[in-house]
Length: 114
Image 1 (cartoon, rainbow, N blue to C red):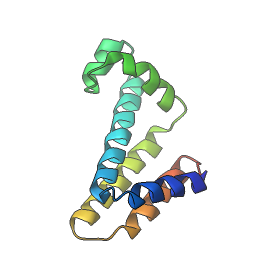
Image 2: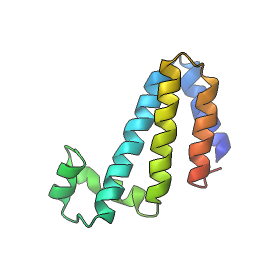
Image 3: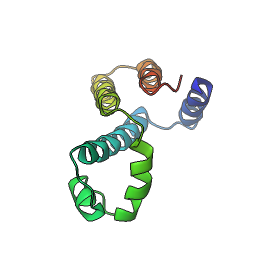
C-alpha cells in the first residue's frame, strides 16, 4: 500500500497542490479521528454529545468516523498528529517538500499500512 500512498502524493504534487494545503488537510483529518477516538475511549456514547465534543456539525458523519477509528490505537493517532504538526512547523520555517514524504510514510508505518 505504500505504493498507493506515494502515487497519491505524486498526483497531488504534480497538480501543483500547495504543501500547506496537503498538510492542513491531513492534520484536520487526523485531529478529527483523534478527537472521536478520545471521546469514545472516555465513554461518550451519544451521537449528539460526541458531535458537540468533537466539533462535528453533521452528527450522521459519526457513523463513518466511529468505523474509521474502531481498530485504531489512540497512541498512534496522537503520534500521527504530532508528526504532522511538526511537519507543518517545519514547512512554515522554510523546509522543502522532501520532509512531506518522510512524514507521510512514517504515519503509514504507525498504522501498519506500509
